[in-house]
Image (cartoon, rainbow, N blue to C red; front, side, top):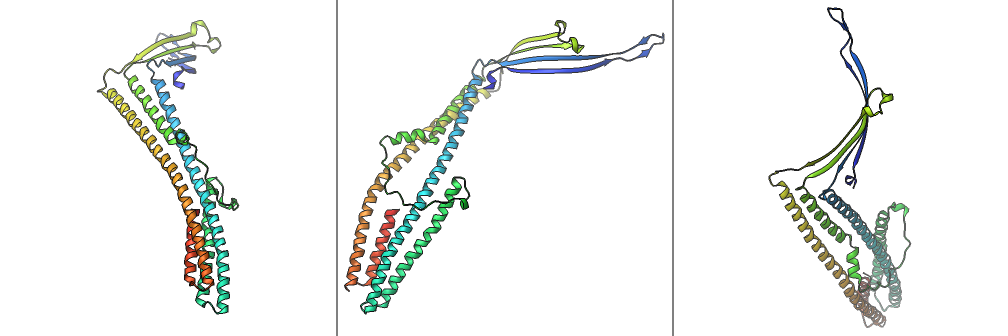
Amino acid sequence: RASLYPSLAGSLSCARNSQGGTASSTSGTQYSGSTRNTYAGQISADWDLDLWGKIRRQIQEQVAAAQISAADVANARLSYQSELAQDYFSLRYEESLKALLEQSMGLYEHALEIVRNQHFGGTASGIDEYQATNTLQQAQANATATDVNRAEYEHAIAVLIGKAPADFSLERSKMPATVPTVPVTLPATLLQRRPDIAAAERQMEEYNAEIGVAIAAFYPDVSLSAAYGYSGTPVQSLIQVANRIWSLGASASETLFEGGARTAAVQEANGDYDAAVANYRQVVLAALQDTEDQLSTLRILQQQGGQQQAAVTSALQAAEVAMNEYRFGTAIYTTVITTQQTALSDQETALQ
């Protein structure tokens, strides 16, 4: 914006000049040179009138470029916020998975106790006891393995919020049981808040201003100049009317022939603008697709979640029935293991 205003410059100078020197002629006449100090002070001003809006268009172009950069920063921030959210819920998933495995371990310990009692009473083989022990040990190992993933997610969260992993910790907590209801007007609101759309729209504005800059090159540059000051000697009497100097001037310059370069520059600016418009449309369409994809995914996953929960209920009932049948000798223990593993797998799927 500074180019819209006149530029002022001030100068102070001091010069010492000497002309000739002391000499004698053949007739005996003496000649002596002169030495003189000259002082000057001056203020000058130059102003580009910007009659055709070239500078104003450049300002518009640069403001749009700055807003694009701001949108890029916002987009980067949003990306890291998204990563933070995903890491957080992944951490809660690992905690919930461990809680699920520990709950299953309680059931496996109870089953192992039943198998041992039956083995001791002679109604079950040692193989059944080993299988029950192995199932319990696998669950214990899987529960311990969740701590590795949890630690990695906790460290990632620490880095994302600007802390050293060693100085950051999160208390264990449960995964949220429900997902917030999505408002009906959310898609339009999300589009207004998306920084990638804002950046594409501002880029369109930037190239539109570039067209104006290119067109302004066809018109002459008109500028005004002025200067006012004093020059003389000695310095004590410098500021006097006799030593005053001033000037006023106006100039206009115009390139008369450039081999079509300015016309090509306008065509290039129009091409850039058309590309920016097409890119803006594409970004908006992609954003609409992305938003609708996620909203439909939420709706479908909600249905799938209900169906998966029903599958979990059936699998737990099947595991209980298999254990009762084994207890009464009407089923082998392999059936019990299979139904327990199926129930655990369905529970993990529901948690995911």
